[in-house]
Amino acid sequence: MSQEIIEHEQKDFSKNWVNSSRFLFYLQVFCLLAFVGGCSFRMYNQRYKGKPTVEVQSSSKYKPEYK
Image (tube, rainbow, N blue to C red; front, side, top):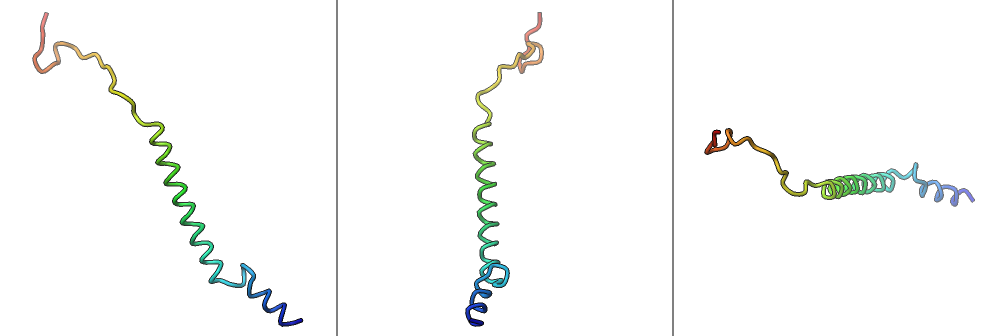
């Protein structure tokens, strides 16, 4: 009976630091990739579309036109 308890304690998440650190590492990698992917997707959807039509005074052009 005592052997079963020891085996169970070794499989516990808080007792086995190798498995828990591996799990936390992969969790961090997944969260980082999800964050970068989500930011990239949002920037792609909110991207700048088309050139604006800006009124430029004729006197401030490269070859100005005066009245």
